[in-house]
Image (cartoon, rainbow, N blue to C red; front, top):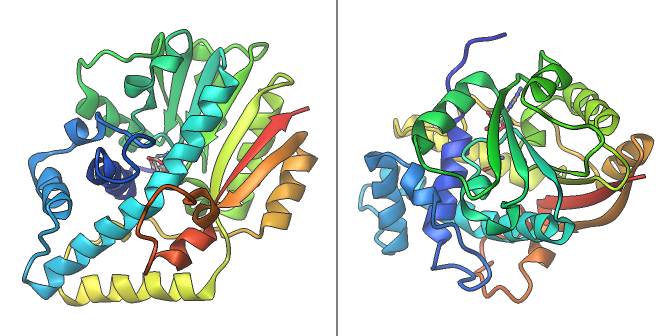
Length: 292
Ligand SMILES: C[S@@+](CC[C@H](N)C(=O)[O-])C[C@H]1O[C@@H](n2cnc3c(N)ncnc32)[C@H](O)[C@@H]1O
């Protein structure tokens, strides 16, 4: 297993949910737990975005803008995943690459479900330190340290009490871009083998887009140039997908696609200010599929 630091992109999206809570799509989106998981410095940036107070320093402004924009894209994604979980009402939920996912601590609908939080060991330790003694609303929260690049899912899940015969909701949110195509295919094969019919997979992924990739590279170059912390530094995108290829891969693994929508469509009616964010919103997608 490779030793590496805890995920910084997991912190970024947690900050984004803290920015959005009660402020973006209020009434539809809520994550009152996200802020509690952040340290003082991470919260300070959240508070400045919530207060619409951009820093005067041009370098610091980049981190501010990155967070403000991430908040707009994270809201429709979170709403779509939450809705898919609520509708499904599973016996167990497996969150792959859970990062600082707060669902086990904020969704009363999971009161009868076990939530397995699968993540790279370093990121998992970070989650457990940040949640501390906070009690989940889920019936049980089970941490499962697994590096999806080098390890298989079954042993850790089984040790943690996963039941292959039960109906499972799998959440694979914001993780696929950080895995290679082979790692994605290998993981999906395992997910299929561990899923009883009727189980549901909710997966977000990034469609290929040259402008979005160019923008991301330019932002990273600017962060380097201005010596600002770069949350994307150690987590490059490794795979981008065409919706048709995702559909084919899901079908091969006995998952029938119910919906596969981009975040721009999922933003409809949420009152988000999508201007300046349409590229990222158009290329981020959420697919929902059911195991045959
Ligand atoms: C952008 S974060 C998303 C976190 C969370 N799913 C969310 O949406 O808030 C990416 C997550 O993928 C996880 N990840 C990346 N590569 C991984 C691997 N090889 N094995 C397990 N988890 C991995 C990271 O540890 C991190 O938690």
